[in-house]
Image (tube, rainbow, N blue to C red; front, side, top):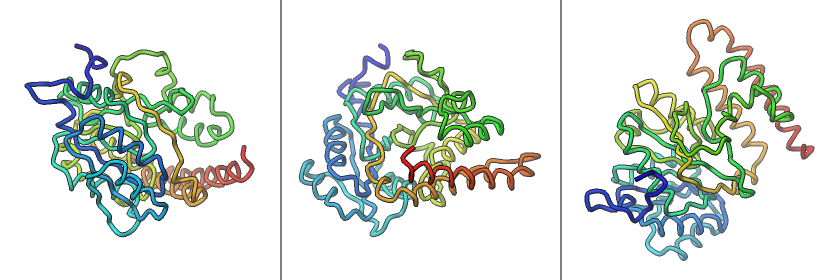
Length: 300
């Protein structure tokens, strides 16, 4: 049986695949998208389902509770950031596998089974990400490389205004647009949606809470790799990401958080002679943040 043939209701050793999965959804001002996402995950028949609400005031949490009665809710009392909220959600569950989701995702039930299949097929794999579609149906580049210094610089300077440049294509793995359904190794996958083994997630301490938003997924995958575990990309599982429902409320803060996180990860992951280049990296990140704010302001 292939990964794509396995749905949420399929059984292994008499136990439904999805029943061994805990879903963790982090919500912040996501509007009606949250209720749709939680309904999708309930339809997938997950063993556990938790929403962590980071201080929303838009009524999204109440709407989700009304749409899906009985969903477990964790309310930290303030906006902890994405990774810290996921950690609280994982701590509130006990299933063997954890499916981490943004609230603005559409998750077909069969996607959960495909992710479970991909993870169980490879004992050395700690974490697997699905193919993420944009609302228009295109492939979002969710499986990426840890970029070389050259690719990182090229992507940083050209990616905003010339996204088809060779540095960005290399970093974002444009070869994955080939339509293949083969499960492949990835350096890291997007934190918008992934399935992880609880034992591996807990072994590396979960998400690093010093990242408020962005790059916490890169950091998590990097730390898993450092302890000998692998990350894979399974295009047999497809989800759709509506994107930006909450970050659009504070675009310039999110741009700054993004680039601050990039600099934090660059500092953490650099060693040897690369540490000498960190001041130059800091300048490049600052320039890119300024360009991103300019692009936002001008709509380019």
